[in-house]
Image 1: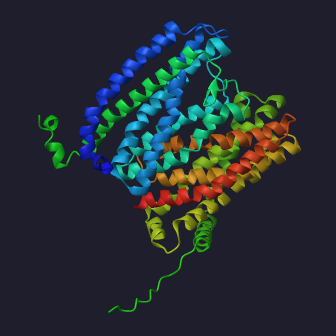
Image 2: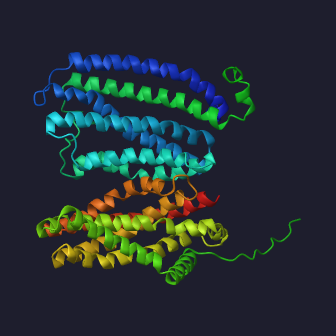
Length: 243
Length: 236
């Protein structure tokens, strides 16, 4: 099988269109299962009461906010090194979803912080670095769209995204490096300190967020391809374009 | 039958050659138009003077907010000086000529950033003890403050240099540059202001200064490459 077959926008356009609905179906099914586990099955937390249930949204979105930035940076590196067209389009397509997850993570964190810490926001290392991540996403999107020549935007924004990668380990390790109000992670590869239903619910919700991110990226990259390649003949031959 | 390879006469470029050439050129330009450097410093002094007028001039309050205000003021002044780094050379085509020179972009881009730091970051550092006196900071706090600026402002110049090169010719101009550069400045601000603040409250400033020094080393190693690459993207 030739893996490079789908690295061309014209072939990937069709593949993305066929795959996207399946990822959305998976995301919906997993979200239904995860929310059922999280809201109905999982026991009340001994210390935090019912409030803790926000983790079923908060933790998956926070994970995805960092993971999507990493994936975006990988596509950006491909853009700069190999100058491939599709990788830049994928990076552009990922950024809004990543920014959305970052925003939801901050927002749900604030709602959880109010009853638990007594404040919506503290300027500690975890929250500040996550806020910086949101601005990095905004900066990436603004810079990518700031030029007449989209290829220039691709490359400039790609370099910015790579500089911003420094922020990822800071977010991830901030709860260990600094004395912060944000609690440390309850999940690690060695085991967990959580009830098993809580953990399952959180992992299922994470899988759902992941599937949603892939689906949304595929739909968005199709729009980017249509816009960027609009003068290409294969676009004019598409049934949806000739209508 | 193979012809002997023609001897190539090529001007040899080097990192140090490009670095010293670009730094000397930019310093000479700055020397002939000293108003830009003076404006940066004047802006810093003005911003720092606005806070006591706006917040209130109780000596305790001023000593408390002094380190942070001075750092934020220096950061904003360094930020406002950024467009001057590449904009004029980009507009008149000199930047494109530099990319055609035999010297690697890494060298002369780093030289330009170094010159920029000497006319913006260094004067801010030298002025900071004077501003600190206005805020009633103790002598050792003034020293730590200046030291943290001495270590921190080169990082700002390098980070900002990369962002300024990326934003060349972009729509949105200064606002876009703010969105790109200021989030990246955040860690430098935290450790820089943290050092002076720790000193002022009787704690050790060493951890903050060490982290700031680590950031400077990482920036010196990694960011000149990024600045050079960003300039290449801009003139391609």
